[in-house]
Image (cartoon, rainbow, N blue to C red; front, side, top):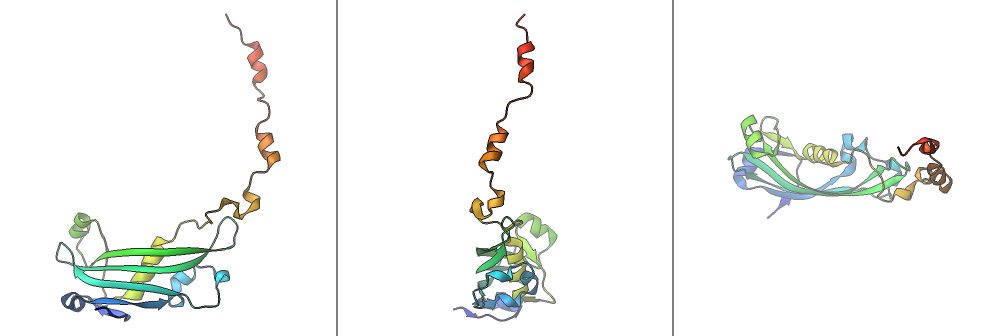
Length: 173
């Protein structure tokens, strides 16, 4: 059974109890992420981030946070500077308070608790920020007509080679 989402979790207690949680977090609760989003694409409705996760143990007997995050974000297209929708679906698998050796051997990312507690909203916000594209652009390259090559520009690219005259001076000897 999955429990309702809370803000903070005691990692070792949740691992011992096999804690499983699900819920929603308002997108407006993420301050750092809010600075990266476009405000022009809002449809008047508060967006939510759907989160479900569980605490387990890794193969190294270290606490492991495994979960899934799903949301939709509005970013500014860097080609046309208009709002664009980015659906986001992430799988999370993070070691909690793992040693450097475990991180190297396991190949997983890690997060560090604050005296045994983690703030799930911070973890989710970090994961969403890491999943954002470096340059957000619409899939359709025609979103900005100024980026399109005009027919006149394409014709000028095919103009005569200035070194063609040298071809006549070439001897066959």
